[in-house]
Length: 202
Ligand SMILES: C[S@@+](CC[C@H](N)C(=O)[O-])C[C@H]1O[C@@H](n2cnc3c(N)ncnc32)[C@H](O)[C@@H]1O
Image 1 (tube, rainbow, N blue to C red):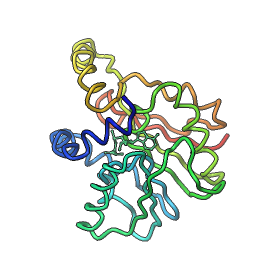
Image 2: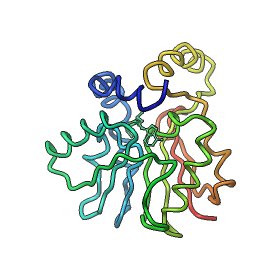
Image 3: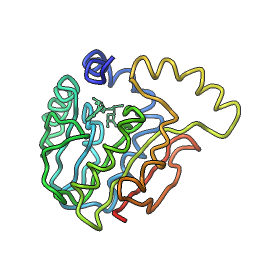
């Protein structure tokens, strides 16, 4: 099933489904994603707008998403939170932004949704639209090294695949050099299962 269809199907319940994780894990992490950023920032795969409360004051934010249904929820959140953010229906693989348009790009739980064959084109596109010296910050799941946690994640994987079209083993780092980027920072923000990648132009 296409990602557009997957997210068209779950948009209405996405926030409810994710609620325990949002408050248990994601909120403190989302805050860190935007720390120190300013200027023009892209929120790629903005979804229902869960990052909105953490957008830096004064920054010029654009959120893009493939799914009209998810963007519809983001529009409602934008109104509720009174945030200034442009929301556009767009594929991260081929955006309409000019070269070097953004100072930074954020992608929270987008690359675990992108299929392996889309990882490199997505990184190349982000590389193109970020200015030299700008950062791409990617937040992703990874399989834990702990055997018990890993086993639980494997049990959980088919549900994650079916509901979100996502996987825990995307290995985004592998595609970084081919996209003309390098890893400036890699660290785990929740146990050894949610990782932050900060990428820059090579
Ligand atoms: C797991 S959700 C994450 C949403 C949000 N970033 C968050 O942290 O809650 C993944 C989002 O990526 C979007 N998406 C999937 N493929 C995409 C693509 N090729 N271009 C843009 N957005 C895409 C989906 O529609 C969905 O809204």
